[in-house]
Length: 275
Image 1 (cartoon, rainbow, N blue to C red):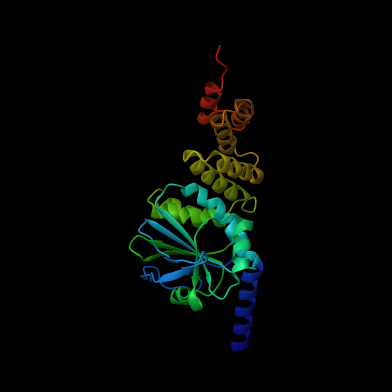
Image 2 (cartoon, rainbow, N blue to C red; image 1 turned 60 degrees about the horizontal axis):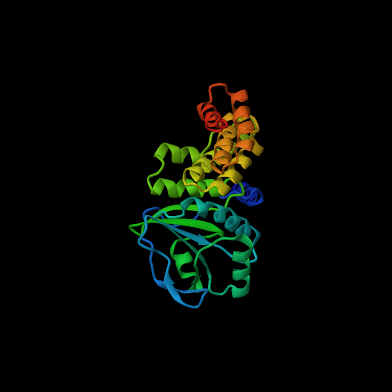
């Protein structure tokens, strides 16, 4: 009996690794744990602390020369743009034993923009009870652990952004839960993924980050080409960029799919040529 249970645990662990999914309940310190803020060496050669006096500290633990860390930092580079000017501090944390050339190369390749702290003997990593890389740890203004998100190959940026926005009180508990545990769709999850890309694009649009908003709404439409709100948002972004010539077909497509779509109707009115 014991051998069967052991085999089952092994198979479950293997499946998790193979699919690239690690549940948020994986090993880490308890939420609410006070996070230490010792001074650490920086990649640039100075000294700094991981935590700042902001609403949300986002600590990104990674390893150079690791494919998953490459993917995570690329996703997070996209996430960062949605929080420009907000009370959010990003920091990348890596073991002090990692080759500095590899660390610098990874940051260049991913575009992730944050100070890099060298965790001596993985002291901070160990104090948080972490057991995998890469992983995002979110800490509040009271220096307490708020959230822990290991890398996932699907929607990592969306999930991390939802965690941060919830801490900033921009979204409700219900909206956070919807982002973390989206309902299954009949198309194998594509519709839900599309809606989450659209929601992130809308947040970027409201922050006037039009280029990133455009990038994400196109990802939404790649997943669900018949999503009327995404076509309407595409039109709004293009119009905001002064490109009504391309915005009008997007608005029209939204109205073809949903004749009552108000943003599309209003967008067409705004894009009408002045006579």
